[in-house]
Structure formats: structure tokens, C-alpha cells
Length: 235
Image (tube, rainbow, N blue to C red):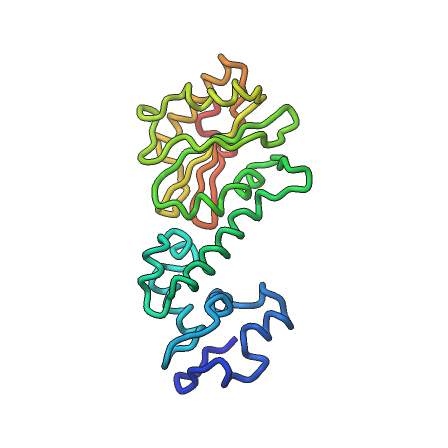
């Protein structure tokens, strides 16, 4: 869609085939820009600023959809033209998106690859402002039994108690686990501390007879599998 002219402010003044709702109905939601999707949620703009322009301003202010996802409800309400109702609509839409990957026909997602694991948690983890460490518990068929959210803050092998990674796995009779954490910077490149933690977890898993299948580092729109990279799993 071409950018609206600065002399046109009301979406009602757009040609019908340029209006977000009509474009969604005709072309599908995937054809719309982030600003257009936000405009549909916002419904109305401000004097001199239509809903698409408000959406563009929010995306610029927060650094994209991920930034809006990360910001708090109160912070969103403080933005010009964003009422509590509009903030609630935006946050509700983002929460539905977060929950979508968790829906599964058999209620238990199956992990067949590092991408499957990343897809299950990436939407939620990329929105976290601090490092978080989660553990996916899997059964003998690699179905996810549970996701344990264990640590928040700076993570390394000295601050994370390796035994805690396996506590719930043993309680739930999990056959294996996948360790996952996020890098709020958006760069999923594993640090030396990440590799050291992986190595310690793999060694503990051997002793407890609970295999560590992988350690996934989540970044913005990308991830790294330490198992694929051979980091912490060899030797």
C-alpha cells in the first residue's frame, strides 16, 4: 500500500480499495502492513492523524511490533491517542498471537527439530525485557509435557543451579529436556557462559538419565541451536 498523502487524514477519504478493513477482506490479513493491522485495532485516529498514522507512530516509538509487545499496558496508555480501550485491544491481540503456537490438535506439541522448539516459545520469549531461562519437558515421543519458567535475569553457569533444570523433569517422569533462554538484545549468538551452562546441563543429564536434547537461544526473528553448533554437547 502506498503511503497516504499528508493532505489526507481520514481513512474514510481513502479509495475503498486502500482502506485497511476492505483490504483485509479482499486480500487477507497477511497482505496488510503492521501499521494497517494496528489501524484496524485502533479504529479511529486523532484530528490531523488517521489510525494508520497513529499505528506508524507507535511502531516508530517502540521499535516495531516486538517493542509494542514488550511495553507495559500503562506505558501504552500514555501514548497520544491511545485510550485504555485501545491499549486493551492491542494487548489482547498480541496475547492471542502468543497463545496461538500453543494450540495443538493433540494438546501436546511434538518437537522434531530445533525449529519446532523455537516456534513454540519464540513469540513469548522475544517480548521479554530480561533474560529468562525455560525448560521444555518431553516424553519418550518428544511430546511437550510442560514448560517450566525457571530463571529471570543474568544467566550463567554460576547463577543457574543445574539441578533445578531437572527437578520438574524427574517429578513429571520426563525422558528428556530442552533448555531455552532469550537474548533481549535480539542477537542469539551464544556466549561462553551459555556454552558452559550447556556443558554442565548435559553432564548432569547423563548422571540423572534425562537427556538434554538441545539448548536454544532465542533472538529477534531468529534462534540458535547449540546442539546444531556442537557447543557444549561434544566431549
